[in-house]
Image (cartoon, rainbow, N blue to C red; front, side, top):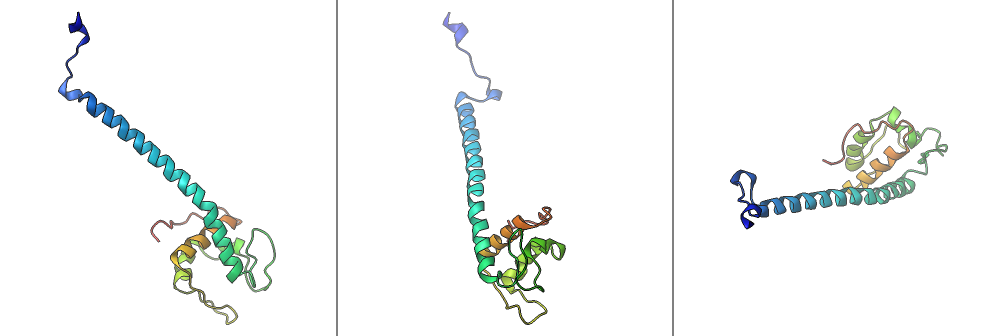
Length: 140
């Protein structure tokens, strides 16, 4: 009677140990993916807040830095409309290497890579035209 219960495993189907190991690996990968998504979502508000703090400190004297408002200096464009002049991701290199403009009133700025990522993330968040995903910061 026990013969019917015992089954020989077919080598093409793998052993029960490999099956258990496979399911454990799949579960671990799903867990890692969930943690990665949760971690990046939790970091985003902090990155946006850092970006806002940086532009408030360095730029708000002349530019409107929020989603609304008028620039204190009429010649300084509001940051929420920068997408009409530039691709937002393209500003990353200028922010890192030294932002220079054609007028003498604007000082030169250089930011660390972490600060650049935060500023770019903040600028993207306030654009009036939300199609700002023209590149990726992953490689920068």
